[in-house]
Amino acid sequence: MAAALALALTIPAPADELPGHLKTCVSLRRDAERLACFDKAVEQIQNGTETAALSAENMFGASTGLPSEKGNRDVEREELREIRGVVTSLRRVDGGMIVVELDNGQAWRQQDADATLTIETGDAVTIMRASMGTFRISDKRGRSARFKRVR
Figure 1 (tube, rainbow, N blue to C red):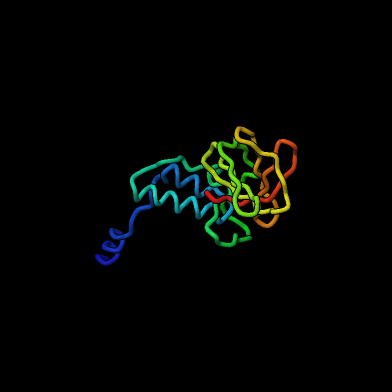
Figure 2: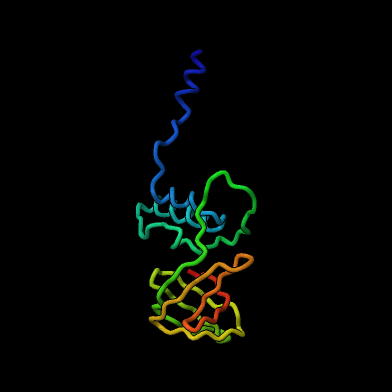
């Protein structure tokens, strides 16, 4: 009996409430985005800072380089299909590809060398999920190209 009592005293009680930023991570549907969210939340906890509120929008397109899992989920998870942002800066990199930085702090690098978009600083753009884990940014004329989130 004493052994059972000692064992019961050593097992931690379940937490009443998860911190808000961890709740956000739990709700994300994509494995790579959810893991990137948890990584960022743990870093914030370890550093004692909460620089940016974690949300489905600011984790959109985040990747850890892990392939996403398929399968049934026990938890209802959130998945954004697209986000919108305003271009705060734009630069050309190797091969004429562009890197756009948005007002939400995200940076996206063009992946399609043959696509020419008309994007300028101050333009509103839409980033949409595409097939096989890719993303597309469309310009003000409706043309789009594949992009990868780099920050």
